[in-house]
Image (cartoon, rainbow, N blue to C red; front, top):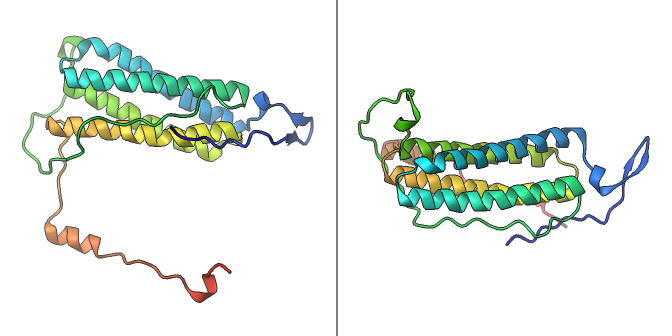
Amino acid sequence: MNQNSFGQGQTHQNMQTGNVPPQMNHGGHELFDVHEVLSTALSGLNLKTILRPHVQDQELLNILNRQYAFALDEYNITVECFKTGKDPSHPTSSYKMQGGNDFIYGMKPSQPKKPIQGPNEITDEMISGYLLGAAKASATAKTAAALETTNPVVRRVLADSIPNCIEMAYELAIYQNKHHYYQVPQLTQQDMQDILNSYAPGHQSMNNQVQ
């Protein structure tokens, strides 16, 4: 569980109106960006609810249910601190995926994708892809919002939740890869080696050393 360092004892000022109460300690950019975060989170939660009855694979259903419960809790504490400007009822938790983290590299031919004609054509491949897209969208929205957030509580809650989005996306990517839904090509060994060798460590110069 992350230990959120909020620093909420500070007094904030508005040049025109004076002291700013905690629930109003938000800048304009922050309000719009956190609104985007919460809207994206709601969309992801609703998407899981809509897709759940169509899931065929028990492993995918378990992933969906675990991620839904975790994302709902994160949504709730984000709403809580956003509305109050104070610490939420509990710190941000850390999502831990289940299973291994081995990717299968290489490509094999597959059927071309095309739009479906009805809900009876929804597959586990589609569902896992939609969930992966939702996790990526949430990570992007939270990163953008955290960089614009002035409220120290909200900023820390957002920053602590970004690794959870990444973990969820990784879990889904591994699931897709295992079932050959998400194929990962590799460069030739020579091209890979050339890129790996194109950087070297830097060294601290005497002028830049901390006194």
